[in-house]
Image (cartoon, rainbow, N blue to C red; front, side, top):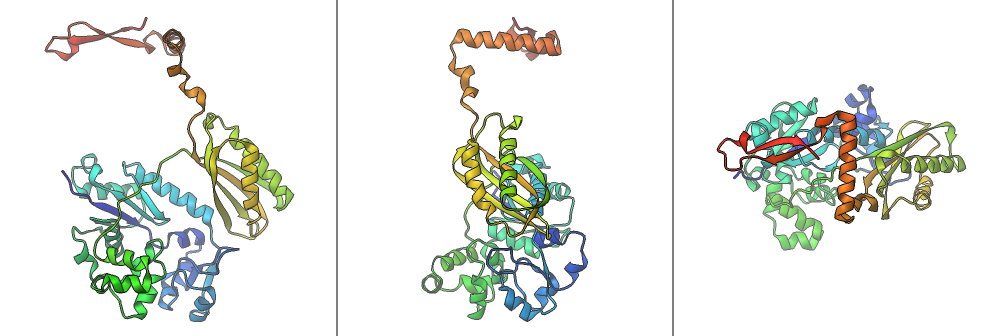
Length: 395
């Protein structure tokens, strides 16, 4: 039985690269993702040139501009990032991976169940991953999620880094890696001020001291530095339905509300929905001034009631930072099928046979007499498998 080996796929500065699009010159100069309108004024991902000036992701905008006066602010494109990252996840899932994605640009999956599909060894899984991505990426593998992330950071774009060690491998890694874990984004800066530069130094600190100064975040960071981590939580793969509406003018106010109502009606009328309820929806817009806006709405209860959906989504339109030229609504998670889906198994035996006879009749009419066959046992004791049973027309 194979030991667990977590693979981490890392696409550095993914959001910044998507937002910059074909403006590659921005990535060579000091640049950073501008804060999203209406949210805390913190810069997003930054270019290598900006990092050389001391600018870090999550830094306040004023401090970032003070450290790099020539810093170019790139309008965020959350819709483009979500679409591009969704294509990457689909590519990874096409090789059989059950993927966990903490953030766009970082994907994790367990290679244990994929080895037999790709040559029986880890190298085959890594080769299949590179072929599926079709782009340069940093790939690392390790016994835990955090070790795999650390390995991906030291890997080269075309040369994966694989380690079977935990704490020993992490000992020389910088504490800055903790920024990639939810809830620990600001902890590395505080640790560096105290003179803690590597995860090995952090792992040697007393747990009680870390808990006293940093609380649960300090304990979590200490566990990661010691090679301990939580198991993977792969995303649930589900069908996504979406509808888009181009607005004739800079949409705002009642015009947006009417457009949203139209999108809700169109989405609920889609044949692919098949009467299923909607658990979560994503409302997004392309702004007239450039950039995009995106909000995810999780309904308290799965619903297919247009009035309830419009009421929940209309409130999010108030957060739109600028007039929009395009509005999009997507059903991200669908609920269970409608109640009629179980009628075949809830009816009596006579009704089920009548339904099956009608299904066979329609299948034969569409695809010919051999569209429906049944297995007839002829010689169950035969040593030749082909003689034990034959296919005959279904009557």
